[in-house]
Length: 282
Length: 284
Image 1 (tube, each protein chain N blue to C red):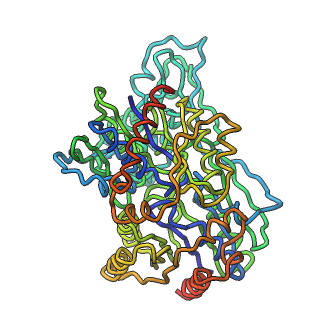
Image 2: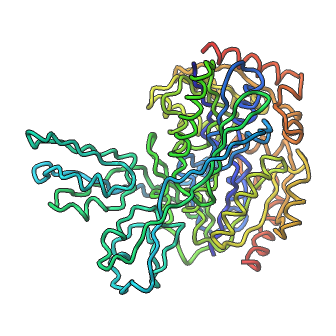
């Protein structure tokens, strides 16, 4: 079973919940798919046993074979190729803007002269390791890279179908989140009881409906703000799976990189109950 | 005219709350919400008279069943696994590259324009506000960010404004880079936690990579003084100035519930510190 933890809004407690759930269950596989800002390792301290670079394919022009016909520029939907040609000398050059390339292969497949090769460009790394009885995988996007979804796909290739898998997703509602939660049997949405939390929760609920993934809410920092999240959940029949009160002890542990279940042992049972509930729902 | 982007790396550190305070404190500015995934700034600025524009930046493949001979070439070549074994296109996976439509031997694939989102120019009591909403499960957030930033910049130039103040998204990827391109200053807001520090170091590296001057604000610094000191050491060793340290205040969630910028809600130390931070950022 694959359970992802997502949120819409950032900083609501995704990593706290994902780490808490993984440690309470034990013997699960943990995937940190927030490759732009991975944080779970700060709480789980995995011993990394394997580290491999992740690549995307981008075009590389073989200028000797190119006649600057401009086809690659015309077929590129992402404006990542510019062909310059001097009509008198028939000489020219081809510029490839790596950061705009989606790696679709159109230029490479459609070049009439076979003058385009694909080269592998490193965008980040995937690290695998162990933390106690958990197996751990995360990705780390290189600074300055824009394309996180291909790296998230690489992280998810490591999914062990024989295990319960917990995925820590990035914030937001667009491509990186979709890539992270796609294929999950259930998604836990972590939010906080404020108008920001509610606004972004609604967006996240829409994403999961689009993807047809069942979901439930964990309300973090319960007690600050207002009741609007709980009212919304009731109106839309979305289960509130757990409430974590705003608690200085939990906040202090978090700030020092200590999982909340280490300071509040009572939550281990609550996380196991939560997992039983979602196993029945999924 | 100066463009300032508030960013954080880590989500939930207080970007939008700080941006809304700047909206209340700064004179002559255009405000922009570049968190087009999960925009929240409108909840504090109460925009009115919104003029809506459609954001059409990409296409999606559509296979005409009657024409398709099920040869499978499109399935073989699609790198996004967007065409199922039944030759139905999954619009969520389709990135609109158009390769399938170009290679289809019987012209059964049409590329349809796709409405990826919408964007708005609105009035607020604090000045003009440009904001957007990317459609659910849509891509191209970077393009939408660039579009609304360009619009805001032109508005600021035409009206001789002093500032464009930009609320950025979390992370370090596509929409963040689009929010930071060519700004005069990145104001990075962080929190004294291991995750905050980890993400701060990556976002500082990003600002150095793109040579954008950066200043740091530590939010809720008093919740973990030892980690706040680590933040200060990290900034010191990266040559990044600390513009201020905001103490924890229970008034912050209350101001959110009220739907107004925190400096208009509270008169405490935290609000004073934010006023001082704006003065430093304005002169930065």
